[in-house]
Image (cartoon, rainbow, N blue to C red):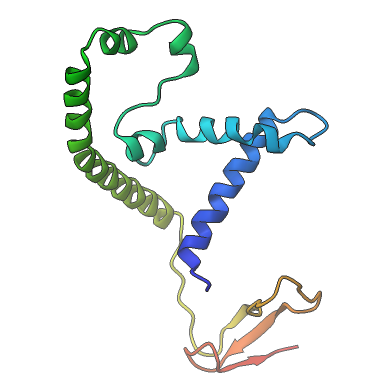
Length: 173
């Protein structure tokens, strides 16, 4: 089943994943299946601008422990190592309880980001009005139901408007 919004998100993620893979894969490009874990780790632990959080933190409630932090202990790791098992379990439970609130805040930041982006995009659009009888450029693209496309499937050209309805136009050439 085709769901345009989800497919757009999936395609955006795939584009990001491909660009990450290009950065970590060797010149032969035959070891991408061995490097996909590194690319996914990089994606999941990078702060996203719209949510101002990492995908990992939104799923698990805490930031990921980087491999470097295991070798060179950070303050966060030192504090966790000093806790007893009960204190660690209590702290983790508190973090999980705060997770819903973190997700709501991320959702609000995402909505604000999208609203700012929309306002910025609308500023670039110049409103135009057309009258009946004006010449306009019409581009008609077919609805593609398969992956194969025909070379002459796009129709475009100057048309004269007979009414405000896009179906009532006359080709001029």
